[in-house]
Picture 1: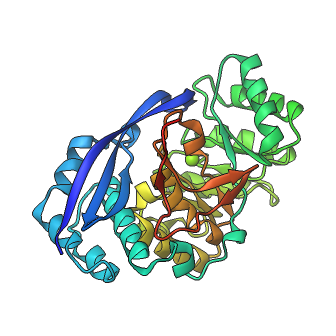
Picture 2 (picture 1 turned 30 degrees about the horizontal axis):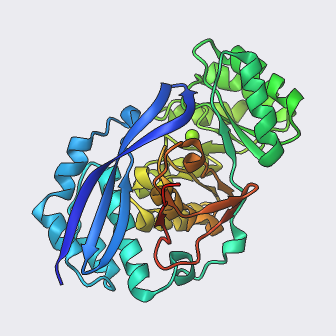
Length: 350
Ligand code: MG
Protein backbone atom coordinates (compact mmCIF):
# COMPACT_ATOMS: atom_id res chain seq x y z
CA UNK A 1 0.00 0.00 0.00
CA UNK A 2 1.38 3.41 -0.92
CA UNK A 3 2.02 5.96 1.77
CA UNK A 4 1.43 9.63 1.08
CA UNK A 5 3.57 12.22 2.78
CA UNK A 6 2.06 15.54 3.72
CA UNK A 7 3.81 18.58 5.17
CA UNK A 8 1.93 21.48 6.66
CA UNK A 9 2.80 24.54 8.74
CA UNK A 10 2.43 24.21 12.50
CA UNK A 11 2.27 27.74 13.92
CA UNK A 12 2.89 27.80 17.64
CA UNK A 13 2.27 30.83 19.83
CA UNK A 14 4.03 31.07 23.17
CA UNK A 15 2.06 31.96 26.27
CA UNK A 16 4.69 34.49 27.29
CA UNK A 17 7.71 35.80 25.37
CA UNK A 18 10.67 33.54 26.04
CA UNK A 19 14.11 35.10 26.50
CA UNK A 20 17.37 33.19 26.55
CA UNK A 21 20.90 34.09 25.57
CA UNK A 22 20.01 33.98 21.84
CA UNK A 23 17.22 36.55 22.09
CA UNK A 24 13.46 36.64 22.62
CA UNK A 25 10.88 34.35 20.99
CA UNK A 26 7.13 34.87 20.86
CA UNK A 27 6.10 32.32 18.20
CA UNK A 28 7.51 29.46 16.16
CA UNK A 29 6.65 28.14 12.72
CA UNK A 30 7.30 24.40 12.90
CA UNK A 31 6.28 21.81 10.30
CA UNK A 32 3.93 18.89 10.80
CA UNK A 33 4.45 15.67 8.83
CA UNK A 34 1.64 13.23 8.18
CA UNK A 35 2.32 9.74 6.80
CA UNK A 36 -0.98 8.51 5.46
CA UNK A 37 -1.23 4.77 4.78
CA UNK A 38 -4.79 3.70 4.05
CA UNK A 39 -6.82 5.24 6.85
CA UNK A 40 -3.84 5.24 9.25
CA UNK A 41 -2.15 8.60 9.85
CA UNK A 42 1.23 8.80 11.57
CA UNK A 43 2.59 12.12 12.84
CA UNK A 44 6.00 13.76 12.94
CA UNK A 45 7.17 17.28 13.67
CA UNK A 46 10.12 19.34 12.55
CA UNK A 47 11.05 22.22 14.84
CA UNK A 48 12.30 25.22 12.88
CA UNK A 49 14.83 26.79 15.21
CA UNK A 50 16.32 30.06 13.96
CA UNK A 51 19.51 29.82 16.07
CA UNK A 52 20.26 26.43 14.50
CA UNK A 53 19.85 28.04 11.05
CA UNK A 54 17.09 25.63 10.06
CA UNK A 55 14.55 26.71 7.45
CA UNK A 56 11.13 25.41 6.47
CA UNK A 57 12.28 25.34 2.85
CA UNK A 58 15.11 22.93 3.54
CA UNK A 59 12.94 20.59 5.58
CA UNK A 60 10.15 20.64 2.98
CA UNK A 61 12.58 19.95 0.12
CA UNK A 62 13.98 16.93 1.95
CA UNK A 63 10.58 15.51 2.81
CA UNK A 64 9.46 15.92 -0.81
CA UNK A 65 12.45 14.05 -2.26
CA UNK A 66 11.79 10.78 -4.12
CA UNK A 67 14.23 8.90 -1.88
CA UNK A 68 12.24 9.86 1.20
CA UNK A 69 9.07 8.73 -0.54
CA UNK A 70 10.78 5.41 -1.21
CA UNK A 71 11.74 5.09 2.46
CA UNK A 72 8.21 5.61 3.77
CA UNK A 73 6.86 3.03 1.31
CA UNK A 74 8.51 0.26 3.34
CA UNK A 75 6.32 -2.12 5.32
CA UNK A 76 5.35 -0.25 8.53
CA UNK A 77 6.67 -3.20 10.57
CA UNK A 78 10.10 -2.94 8.93
CA UNK A 79 11.00 0.19 10.86
CA UNK A 80 14.76 -0.27 10.58
CA UNK A 81 14.58 -0.74 6.81
CA UNK A 82 12.56 2.44 6.43
CA UNK A 83 14.95 4.44 8.67
CA UNK A 84 17.98 3.05 6.84
CA UNK A 85 16.45 4.07 3.53
CA UNK A 86 16.13 7.73 4.53
CA UNK A 87 18.77 9.58 2.51
CA UNK A 88 21.46 11.59 4.32
CA UNK A 89 20.65 15.22 5.02
CA UNK A 90 22.33 18.03 6.93
CA UNK A 91 18.91 18.71 8.47
CA UNK A 92 18.58 16.75 11.71
CA UNK A 93 15.22 18.48 12.07
CA UNK A 94 13.82 16.98 8.86
CA UNK A 95 15.29 13.62 9.71
CA UNK A 96 13.75 13.74 13.21
CA UNK A 97 10.30 14.50 11.82
CA UNK A 98 10.39 11.42 9.57
CA UNK A 99 11.94 9.20 12.25
CA UNK A 100 9.17 10.21 14.68
CA UNK A 101 6.43 9.55 12.12
CA UNK A 102 7.91 6.15 11.16
CA UNK A 103 8.05 5.16 14.85
CA UNK A 104 4.46 6.32 15.33
CA UNK A 105 3.38 4.19 12.37
CA UNK A 106 5.36 1.17 13.63
CA UNK A 107 3.79 1.36 17.09
CA UNK A 108 0.34 1.80 15.60
CA UNK A 109 0.85 -1.24 13.37
CA UNK A 110 1.79 -3.30 16.45
CA UNK A 111 -1.00 -1.78 18.54
CA UNK A 112 1.28 -0.74 21.41
CA UNK A 113 2.84 2.48 22.73
CA UNK A 114 6.53 2.94 21.93
CA UNK A 115 7.59 2.77 25.58
CA UNK A 116 6.01 -0.67 25.88
CA UNK A 117 7.62 -1.94 22.68
CA UNK A 118 10.97 -0.88 24.14
CA UNK A 119 10.26 -2.65 27.44
CA UNK A 120 10.23 0.57 29.49
CA UNK A 121 8.40 1.25 32.73
CA UNK A 122 6.49 4.54 32.39
CA UNK A 123 6.60 5.03 36.18
CA UNK A 124 10.38 5.59 35.84
CA UNK A 125 10.01 8.94 34.07
CA UNK A 126 11.85 11.63 36.03
CA UNK A 127 9.75 14.67 36.94
CA UNK A 128 10.05 17.31 34.26
CA UNK A 129 11.83 20.52 35.07
CA UNK A 130 10.15 23.78 34.19
CA UNK A 131 12.07 26.49 32.40
CA UNK A 132 12.11 30.10 33.55
CA UNK A 133 13.42 32.44 30.87
CA UNK A 134 15.47 35.53 31.67
CA UNK A 135 13.48 38.66 32.40
CA UNK A 136 14.71 42.15 33.23
CA UNK A 137 11.48 42.83 35.09
CA UNK A 138 12.71 41.52 38.43
CA UNK A 139 9.32 41.44 40.13
CA UNK A 140 7.68 39.57 37.24
CA UNK A 141 10.60 37.14 37.10
CA UNK A 142 10.47 36.31 40.77
CA UNK A 143 6.71 35.92 40.69
CA UNK A 144 7.12 33.41 37.83
CA UNK A 145 9.74 31.50 39.82
CA UNK A 146 7.58 31.48 42.94
CA UNK A 147 4.47 30.29 41.09
CA UNK A 148 6.31 27.58 39.13
CA UNK A 149 7.96 26.37 42.30
CA UNK A 150 4.55 25.49 43.73
CA UNK A 151 4.02 22.92 41.01
CA UNK A 152 7.48 21.85 39.83
CA UNK A 153 10.17 20.33 42.03
CA UNK A 154 12.97 21.37 39.63
CA UNK A 155 13.16 24.78 37.96
CA UNK A 156 15.59 25.46 35.09
CA UNK A 157 16.75 29.06 35.22
CA UNK A 158 18.04 30.42 31.94
CA UNK A 159 21.28 32.35 32.26
CA UNK A 160 23.99 33.78 30.01
CA UNK A 161 22.80 37.36 30.35
CA UNK A 162 24.45 39.82 27.94
CA UNK A 163 25.03 41.94 31.06
CA UNK A 164 27.49 39.35 32.37
CA UNK A 165 27.59 36.49 34.83
CA UNK A 166 27.16 38.85 37.79
CA UNK A 167 23.67 39.64 36.52
CA UNK A 168 22.92 35.89 36.28
CA UNK A 169 24.23 35.33 39.77
CA UNK A 170 22.10 38.14 41.16
CA UNK A 171 18.99 36.73 39.48
CA UNK A 172 19.66 33.16 40.63
CA UNK A 173 20.27 34.26 44.23
CA UNK A 174 17.02 36.21 44.16
CA UNK A 175 15.19 33.17 42.76
CA UNK A 176 16.64 31.03 45.57
CA UNK A 177 14.95 33.33 48.09
CA UNK A 178 11.43 32.89 46.72
CA UNK A 179 11.10 29.13 46.19
CA UNK A 180 11.98 25.85 47.86
CA UNK A 181 12.11 24.04 44.51
CA UNK A 182 15.46 22.62 43.40
CA UNK A 183 17.21 24.85 40.85
CA UNK A 184 19.32 24.09 37.82
CA UNK A 185 20.91 26.63 35.50
CA UNK A 186 21.22 26.67 31.70
CA UNK A 187 23.71 29.20 30.32
CA UNK A 188 23.04 28.34 26.65
CA UNK A 189 26.69 28.97 25.61
CA UNK A 190 26.47 32.33 27.36
CA UNK A 191 29.58 32.33 29.57
CA UNK A 192 33.26 32.36 28.74
CA UNK A 193 35.86 30.43 30.75
CA UNK A 194 36.41 33.20 33.30
CA UNK A 195 32.68 33.61 33.87
CA UNK A 196 32.15 29.86 34.23
CA UNK A 197 35.01 29.61 36.73
CA UNK A 198 33.57 32.48 38.73
CA UNK A 199 29.93 31.49 38.86
CA UNK A 200 29.89 27.67 39.01
CA UNK A 201 31.47 27.40 42.50
CA UNK A 202 28.88 29.90 43.71
CA UNK A 203 26.09 27.86 42.14
CA UNK A 204 27.54 24.81 43.84
CA UNK A 205 27.24 26.51 47.24
CA UNK A 206 23.65 27.40 46.42
CA UNK A 207 22.89 23.71 45.84
CA UNK A 208 22.18 23.99 42.12
CA UNK A 209 21.42 20.49 40.80
CA UNK A 210 23.28 20.84 37.49
CA UNK A 211 24.68 23.45 35.12
CA UNK A 212 23.89 23.15 31.45
CA UNK A 213 26.10 24.31 28.58
CA UNK A 214 28.25 26.74 30.59
CA UNK A 215 30.68 27.37 27.71
CA UNK A 216 30.42 27.98 23.97
CA UNK A 217 29.65 24.77 22.14
CA UNK A 218 32.97 24.50 20.30
CA UNK A 219 35.19 25.23 23.30
CA UNK A 220 36.04 21.73 24.48
CA UNK A 221 39.42 22.98 25.77
CA UNK A 222 37.42 25.37 27.90
CA UNK A 223 35.46 22.51 29.46
CA UNK A 224 38.77 20.85 30.30
CA UNK A 225 40.25 24.02 31.78
CA UNK A 226 37.16 24.91 33.80
CA UNK A 227 36.82 21.41 35.22
CA UNK A 228 40.41 21.54 36.43
CA UNK A 229 39.71 24.48 38.74
CA UNK A 230 36.21 23.63 39.93
CA UNK A 231 35.69 22.23 43.43
CA UNK A 232 35.39 18.45 43.49
CA UNK A 233 31.72 18.63 44.50
CA UNK A 234 30.72 20.90 41.61
CA UNK A 235 27.26 20.31 40.15
CA UNK A 236 27.22 18.02 37.10
CA UNK A 237 27.98 19.89 33.87
CA UNK A 238 25.51 18.89 31.19
CA UNK A 239 26.29 19.49 27.53
CA UNK A 240 23.41 20.65 25.36
CA UNK A 241 24.46 22.72 22.35
CA UNK A 242 27.81 20.87 22.35
CA UNK A 243 25.92 17.64 21.70
CA UNK A 244 24.19 17.08 18.39
CA UNK A 245 24.14 13.55 17.03
CA UNK A 246 25.66 10.23 18.03
CA UNK A 247 29.12 11.28 16.78
CA UNK A 248 29.25 14.18 19.25
CA UNK A 249 29.04 12.03 22.41
CA UNK A 250 32.51 10.45 22.57
CA UNK A 251 34.48 13.72 22.35
CA UNK A 252 32.67 14.90 25.50
CA UNK A 253 33.58 11.85 27.59
CA UNK A 254 35.45 13.06 30.68
CA UNK A 255 34.46 16.67 29.98
CA UNK A 256 30.68 16.68 30.37
CA UNK A 257 29.01 14.77 33.20
CA UNK A 258 25.90 14.35 31.11
CA UNK A 259 24.25 15.18 27.81
CA UNK A 260 20.96 16.78 26.89
CA UNK A 261 19.48 14.73 24.04
CA UNK A 262 16.89 16.37 21.82
CA UNK A 263 15.29 14.56 18.90
CA UNK A 264 15.54 17.64 16.70
CA UNK A 265 19.30 17.83 17.19
CA UNK A 266 20.14 14.16 16.77
CA UNK A 267 17.63 13.21 14.08
CA UNK A 268 14.99 11.26 15.97
CA UNK A 269 14.26 8.39 18.31
CA UNK A 270 16.66 5.81 16.89
CA UNK A 271 19.79 8.00 17.14
CA UNK A 272 18.58 9.20 20.55
CA UNK A 273 18.49 5.61 21.79
CA UNK A 274 21.97 5.03 20.37
CA UNK A 275 23.21 8.14 22.18
CA UNK A 276 21.72 6.98 25.47
CA UNK A 277 23.52 3.65 25.20
CA UNK A 278 26.81 5.31 24.27
CA UNK A 279 26.63 7.99 26.97
CA UNK A 280 25.84 5.35 29.61
CA UNK A 281 28.91 3.41 28.51
CA UNK A 282 30.94 6.57 29.28
CA UNK A 283 29.23 6.92 32.68
CA UNK A 284 27.34 10.04 31.65
CA UNK A 285 23.97 11.20 32.88
CA UNK A 286 21.10 11.59 30.45
CA UNK A 287 18.70 14.45 30.02
CA UNK A 288 15.86 14.30 27.51
CA UNK A 289 15.01 17.77 26.28
CA UNK A 290 13.03 19.40 23.52
CA UNK A 291 12.78 22.53 21.41
CA UNK A 292 9.73 24.80 21.24
CA UNK A 293 7.53 22.01 19.93
CA UNK A 294 3.94 20.80 20.07
CA UNK A 295 2.77 17.66 21.84
CA UNK A 296 3.78 15.60 18.78
CA UNK A 297 7.54 16.03 19.22
CA UNK A 298 7.41 16.44 23.00
CA UNK A 299 5.46 13.20 23.39
CA UNK A 300 7.92 11.39 21.12
CA UNK A 301 10.77 12.51 23.38
CA UNK A 302 8.77 11.61 26.49
CA UNK A 303 8.67 7.95 25.42
CA UNK A 304 12.44 7.91 26.17
CA UNK A 305 12.07 9.60 29.57
CA UNK A 306 12.12 6.31 31.55
CA UNK A 307 15.76 5.97 30.38
CA UNK A 308 16.75 9.44 31.58
CA UNK A 309 18.02 11.05 34.79
CA UNK A 310 16.40 14.37 33.94
CA UNK A 311 13.49 15.34 31.74
CA UNK A 312 13.09 18.84 30.36
CA UNK A 313 9.84 18.37 28.51
CA UNK A 314 7.83 21.44 29.33
CA UNK A 315 7.62 22.95 25.84
CA UNK A 316 4.01 22.03 25.22
CA UNK A 317 3.13 23.86 28.45
CA UNK A 318 4.70 27.03 27.10
CA UNK A 319 2.50 26.97 23.98
CA UNK A 320 -0.92 28.63 23.94
CA UNK A 321 -2.30 26.83 20.86
CA UNK A 322 -1.01 23.24 20.87
CA UNK A 323 -3.30 21.38 18.40
CA UNK A 324 -2.36 18.00 19.89
CA UNK A 325 -2.47 16.14 23.18
CA UNK A 326 -0.14 13.35 24.19
CA UNK A 327 2.11 13.21 27.23
CA UNK A 328 0.33 14.74 30.23
CA UNK A 329 1.53 16.18 33.50
CA UNK A 330 0.17 15.46 36.94
CA UNK A 331 1.96 18.11 38.94
CA UNK A 332 5.40 17.67 37.44
CA UNK A 333 5.09 13.93 36.78
CA UNK A 334 5.07 12.89 33.13
CA UNK A 335 2.18 10.59 32.27
CA UNK A 336 2.94 8.70 29.08
CA UNK A 337 -0.02 7.91 26.83
CA UNK A 338 -1.19 4.29 26.84
CA UNK A 339 -2.20 4.36 23.18
CA UNK A 340 -0.46 2.82 20.16
CA UNK A 341 2.56 4.52 18.64
CA UNK A 342 3.19 8.02 19.97
CA UNK A 343 -0.32 8.03 21.39
CA UNK A 344 -0.90 11.60 20.24
CA UNK A 345 -4.43 12.76 19.44
CA UNK A 346 -5.79 15.93 17.89
CA UNK A 347 -7.10 18.29 20.52
CA UNK A 348 -10.79 18.99 20.04
CA UNK A 349 -11.44 22.71 19.93
CA UNK A 350 -13.42 23.81 22.98
MG1 MG B 1 19.70 23.84 27.13
